[in-house]
Length: 514
Image 1 (cartoon, rainbow, N blue to C red):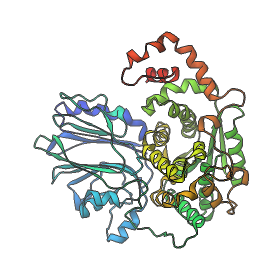
Image 2: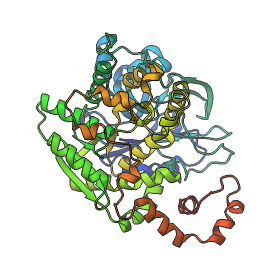
Image 3: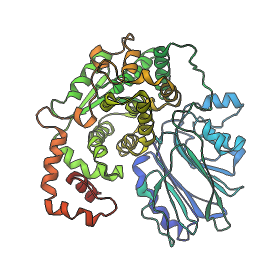
Image 4: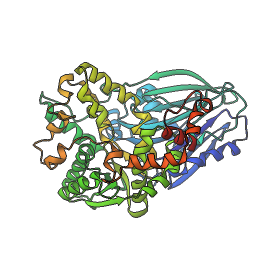
């Protein structure tokens, strides 16, 4: 989990503008570099590094001798970088997975490069020969990217919107916008380095199979076997790391499956350390109890974080700051994840954290899928949820972990696994026998990876699972907000926020707080 920042065509003093890059220092606590480019005095590239792979050569902006006119900053992991080297006969100069982006771009262009990356990424390339800038973001938007562009040609990008808020400019803009997942954009720089968009392309859509080839192929019609193979492959490739790996473990199906597959691989490959697992909840929460059972079954080094209502309330302001969102469901669910990430950073040496985000959207896991009017409608809803993931659960996972200098990885959003699962007959994916995600659960029914009551544990919202049995996290929040927002403030909310009027006191409080 790193932080990237860049600016092109600034009429203001670059040394002053660069101060904004420090707003995302939490994303990369290991090193920082900011660099101006010779002959491009109105441009600057900044990078905060979290060192995961190739500690010696992985610093950015990255440039290699053979393509010295190409400058790269990126945040992400490219899992098939070694396969691409072999397939295309490329000789990389470092072990850093991101170097392959430069080679692919130089050899075949930006769209080809983005299509052939198996991983998650947000990147910015400056080609000083062509005087062009290229931006790209992975299919699900697992890695964040924001953009600011003005009418007079200033272009700025950052991993988080807060790194663009302090920039000075003298022209109108559309404001700070999230860069759309699955897209690449090409900008042309004039003699004053002012940027003009010349091409925008969607290189990949959610549900479409990837363009790159992989060693693992589905070779028969055994649906459940293919699901097991593809999910295990998705987990295994995400263990690419020179830092310690751990797992978020709520005791629900998704995080438990991911953890079980991590532990299986670690044992088979004689990891030098036990896998650490982390659960969080209020006293007596169902998540803590279920996670404890899974950890005992898998024999992990398990850590339980118990938070009080006061600690949850105290974290709200920081959570909203890092989320850059006041979506009520996202904020509720983010508090626990933020606090457990704080614990991991302060109390352990795990840095790469695997989690179960994306399963409910891919595999139709939300409880309301029981009421789907048809299999076709359920498929359409699944696709809609996946399209919006970058604004909600994916955002939550990224921001709550990066706030503490951790890197989250989400196997359920693997290209190969997700496209295969979403391509299956729509009738197979519907809830059955009163169980959502029946197909996914049954695929692992005979694997003995998990206890049966965990594999078939009913779905719970994250904010429900962490709750105390006597006073839920939702009730704690509502009681607190009732004391902060009175009826008079609620009655004037429409006048104060005419374009985005909060409909509840909770929504108003969060909007005021941000």
